[in-house]
Image 1: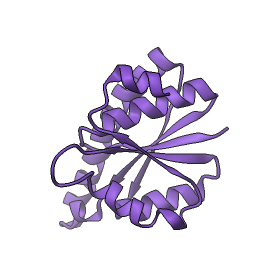
Image 2: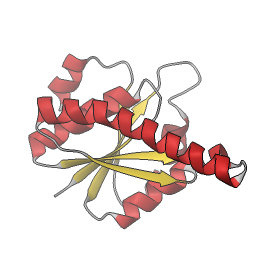
Image 3: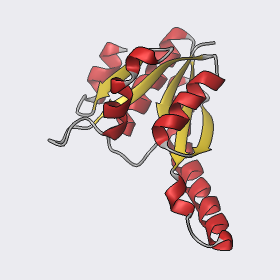
Length: 151
């Protein structure tokens, strides 16, 4: 089964990427893998404090994931999988793509502010020629209705 890989973070554009991936997966018989990356600098504290912070970060991610997962199950009939990795976001995205041969497309949401599309879109498009799969970039200001029409 082909899976759409979506990155779960705190950005507003993440929502449109989730919608797009779920709708495409639903209409094409695919799946959705949701990847959240915990940057290592969050845990550069004492060992005990770092372990507690790591666990709290995982719990926040799981709660955030469940919001999207419930919508995907209820509205799109898709049961997404959650993958949590620790490291630099781009490195971990590439590692996940290489480790999971079912991933067929990376779906990213593009920011709408004047600073540009966002760090992940910027960094991944620079190396996109060397990736083994395509990247779909979903504009952050697309409406739900437009996303549905496109998918």
